[in-house]
Image (cartoon, rainbow, N blue to C red; front, side, top):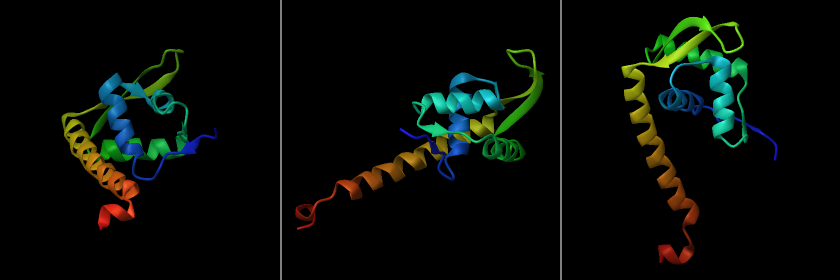
Length: 114
């Protein structure tokens, strides 16, 4: 199965959830974990990920610090802030409502509307 690009508007939520579950990670680690969690169905483009991380940092949802990666390279590590946790809760709830609504439309049959 070919990998899909991450759908517009979903990457920020995936980043926030990944940081909530796994704690501080560098960008490459975040990308790999998102791909792993997706069952290797998604491909996370570095050119898409870093602008999202910068935007989340600018908005106060994540903070970054310089550090050293597992392979001794300098890296910027991102962690979730209290504002990021709140945003994650709100956005996850909105996505749950949206997917429940779409599930209803996809499952509907003519006899359901009679």
